[in-house]
Image 1 (cartoon, one colour):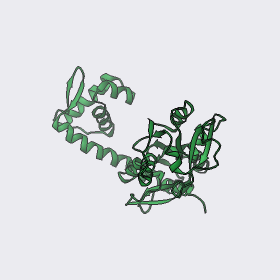
Image 2 (cartoon, helix red, strand yellow):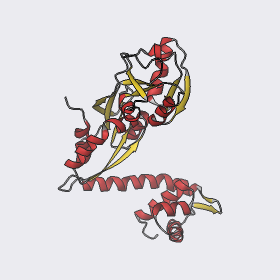
Image 3 (cartoon, helix red, strand yellow):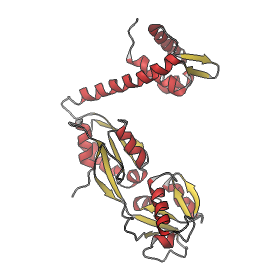
Image 4 (cartoon, rainbow, N blue to C red):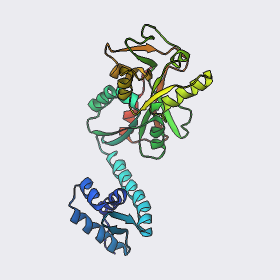
Length: 296
C-alpha cells in the first residue's frame, strides 16, 4: 500500500462533506482534475471504492462511511499534534478556537480580544458566533477551546468564570406609549406584541418561561435571527423587543428608539467564559481565558 498523506485525508473529508468534487476543489483551492486524481489514488492505496460518482455529485460507499469516521478522528489527531508541538515553542502561539454568543461579540469581546492580540500577537483566534447552547456543546465536543455565553447550570464537564453582566432592556419606538417610562416590569411588556430573536435561543426561552410563570400569553409578533433585525422590526412598528443592553446600544442607540431597563430579578444577564477541564491547558488557551475573565 502506498503511503497515505494527511493532505489526501483532508481532501477526502472535504469531498465527503460537500458531496461534490467540484465544490470541494473550489473550497480547497485545487484544480478539480487534480482533486479527482488524489481521491482515485487514495482509493487505489486503500483497495476500496470510497465514492459512487454521478453527474449530480458523489455519495459515500459503506467503506467510504467508515473512512469518513476514521478520517475525522485522524484529522483531529493531526490538528492536536500540531497544537501540542506549537505550545512548546519559546513564544506563545498557535490557534485558539473561540465560540461566543452574539451579545458577547457585540458588546464586550472586541476590546478584550484587542488587548489579548497586543499581548500575544502570534496567537491566531478562530472566532465562531454561536448560541450559548452551541458554545457549550462545542467545548464539550472539543470543537472549541473556549466558549462565551449566558450563565447556565447545564454545563457539566466545563469550568466557568465571570465575563460580563449584560442587563436586559426593553426597546420601543420613540413615540410608543411606554417610551416615557424609566423602567418596566415584564408583566407590562407582555401586554404588547413582541419581536423575538432566535426562538430556540437562551433569551427567547427565558422570556417564554417568565411569561408562563406570570400566566400571561407570550404575544410573539415576529421572529428574527439577529439583534439588528429585531431593532429594524421595532423601528417599523411590528412590536417591542427585550434585548441585552449591549445589543440595544449597538443597534437602537439613535433617537428613533427608547431603551428602558427591564426591572426584574432575572434581568441582570450574566455571561460566563467556559472551557473544558484540562490540566495543563495550552498556553495560548490559558492566556486567552485570563484575558477574558472579568476582573474583580
